[in-house]
Length: 305
Image 1 (cartoon, rainbow, N blue to C red):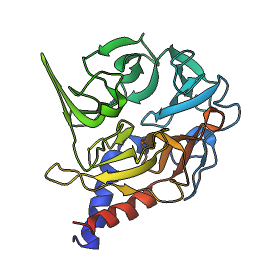
Image 2: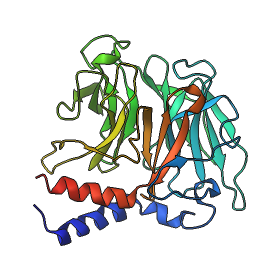
Image 3: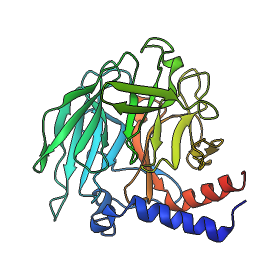
């Protein structure tokens, strides 16, 4: 067991290194997070009503730029269909948040590169697209990765490695039961994907994830039922690269049967966002205070080693 003083030092180093860029943004102003009233320990719907739900439903992972001045999210018509799906952006112009604008159609799950210059997106056939910064906007989406295996919830990290839910060499892309939380290395002429194995992965679908930029922890959707309800758990990575037994995020987040996915931690480290719904009609983005919960879960995890 590590000392409490050592744990606190590690905690402070983690958040200071993760959010250096964020400190120059609007995070500590009333305009942060679309100027919404922030939650405490109990999750609540983020920006409900017609702010976001103007195109059917909202779902999947959201993304903020490091300065907090741009917000990205997926709109859709249905849970399990890409028809009518796309990504929207809302920009803070220095005075107010503008109305949502569509930046691409038929793509979903926006994920920013760590330097903010690339926006990765999920495409049909579990492929990965990307858009590159052009001035204050974005270029057209282009296909980035289309491999024999699936890449679901594609996420970059500081090390240059990528994480995704993938079936690797374990079957067809359509066989979701074969998806594992996996790590991907991309080199010229050589792309390698490796399942992260136990204790993260289960015999069923393992694909919805958030990985910290420094790969120190992952938030995963797990304990999935045959009808896709699941809970959010966290696993911390040991210094030797192995992953620890996942811990539940607790009863305030895992409050009964529901679909929970699209997990994402804001660049300032204060809030956890995720999609939750028992059906299409009540599917929404939720957010909850994260930094305090993270500290408790990290201390709980440290006690198990």
